[in-house]
Length: 180
Image (cartoon, rainbow, N blue to C red; front, side, top):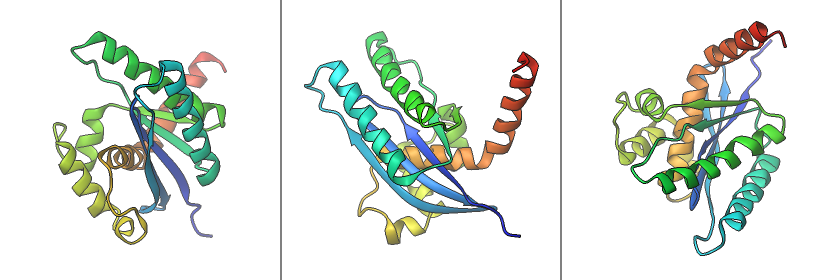
């Protein structure tokens, strides 16, 4: 009997641009499915921007039916207001897949960079280049140009594909320890 492919959505949270990328993990093979960027008009009130991101991400989940979700953990900016706003967008990125019944994993930016590029301090261009190398089908079926946000989201999905077994085991241990 063959393996069952797991469809993973990676999400790069952002208030202006929220990247998403979907891969399938079939055994040890990674297969590109789709990617894109959700845009929220920065001139709109915050609540409207968050609603736009919520609706766009919900539609993406409905269209592609992933099995699991992973997002990049937020990092602290020098500007607390920017960090707070990013945190609100990150809340959307967490709750939309959770409402769809998906398990949601979170990964630190340095781990994502190290997993995809080999260095925890890689630049965005390096991440995009490695994503294209790791997902060659992207060049055939993907958009003409991979946005930095979509590349980052695919990197999150790739990281989850690599670490999902240990993440699931850790989550199961935590649930077992709490008695639920």
